[in-house]
Amino acid sequence: MTVRSGVVGATRYLHWESPGTAAPVVLMHGMGAVARSWQPVAERLASRRPVYALDRRGHGGSADTPPLSFARFRDDLLTFLADTGLRGVVGVGHSAGGTDLLLAAAESEVFEHLIVVEPTLLDAAARSGEPELSPLSETMVARMAKRPDVFRSAALAEKFLLAQSALELSSWHPEALAGYLADGVRARADGAAAIVCAAASEAAMLRDILLVMEGRYAGSEFDRLDAVGCPVDLVRCGRSRDTFQMMGALGARLLPRCTVRREPDASHFLVQTDPARFAALVETLIAERTRNSAGDVLDRAVR
View 1 (tube, rainbow, N blue to C red):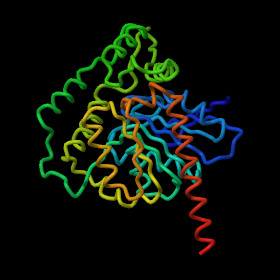
View 2: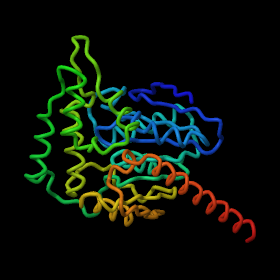
View 3: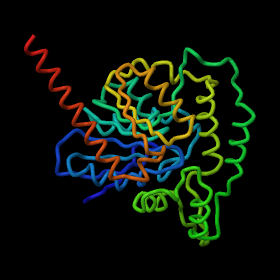
């Protein structure tokens, strides 16, 4: 299977070419991950359709220029879609990558269908007047900012990440983990290795995510979630932490055409721990939406 890479603006992307002609899929990873960690999912989906996976700004091969904000991630995605001319897109996003897709879909009609796994969301109408994080969240951000970026070798970087990363890498499928390490850790000329998503960048992203989760985020990016016009399948994982459960419930309430899909025995990292299962779920959800759309067209024709 041919995998090509390209750059649009600040965004590096991967493209799995396909003999199939079904609707294209655009994959968006979450905070700290990389496009290539989608590899075992993308390979399965590409048997029927072209598949694209983007490195979010500050990750993988994409630029790290600030601000690393919700608006910037959304706009990077919209720039990629405009440059490639993709239409009728099925967007598939994990965590903050699902947020990028939802915010972009509120501004664009290129999406046919979204499948998002526990995205970060805010009810703008219930926003708190307090713009500062709680002490506990501030501690989490400070801890992230102090994480080492550079290690004496790639092996030491990998050992650290498997033991310390919030991504729960030790539970990932070997192919997803290999994809992450290939683009998430970079060898340096002096023989050392660096984590590509720098601690300062990840701390800045984490701060915004926690502000949203606490209802304290002051930005306007979430004010138009009711403008998402395409159907959304929101995947909720039964073994996720309470904060992700809360985000799932919020999405079900805020998104106009949202259907909740429950995976009771899965963790927040379903995408990476069981890519075959997740790819099969994506194909099932696409098929269901296609049948429903065909039925709607037939009903209108009969009427």
